[in-house]
Length: 322
Image (cartoon, rainbow, N blue to C red; front, side):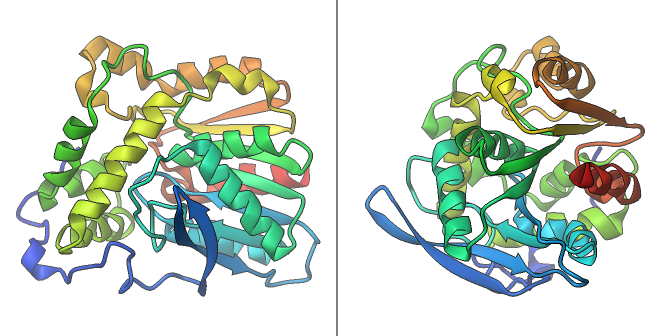
């Protein structure tokens, strides 16, 4: 799905954003937590949202997808806080308001950083929601913390398969060059619009505009470098083979029309189709996760919590109470 070029804002019509989204307003107060990686002292951005009604004593941590920071979980956070949950929503290193360092990215690192953040906040037991790439981070976090994760929710997670089987390996230079030149507003708008089966411009255009505005930043090459390295992380660090080790109850919720494949442009068409069959891949995954419930959302793409928020919450909230 692509946007009509006549309606896509040009770069000149949009104000630039810094690569840490300094000028972009988040829905809740953003704080920073010090972490260390590759001998660098870094500041990890996060939101810590208290319950808006009588607290139920439970907490939820959110793991965002690759194209976004935790700002796109606004409605999910509202629903959780309104139901009495405390919500911790970090921007992982390389995303959102967190820095874009040139480091060795790993799901182990991101999960460990999140564990340190929760310890700092005095939060022990948590339910976990991971969307897209965040599904891989959430899986690794759960495997590393089997005694503190009460519920795991995987929303259209990447990692339902091993992308090394079907996609030829690409050099860092190739991945970086692609990200460095991924700056055409029409291409970016079409990419984000393609996440939805019935795209509502009020929903997807603001998300796309964030990505377009970042490309105007003079520091965009640093963003591009981090984006390339995190694609490499997705490709090189599968979680699929460890699904049978996931201990907590798990809700696997996917859009029936989701066909996202990271680095899919480097695959043969037949392989890309296989690697992007979320319905089939999620069924296989659910059969191996010991306590899995699987929900397929009809007429839905890659982001159910934005495309069908009522149905997503109708599955999500009762599951957390189960």
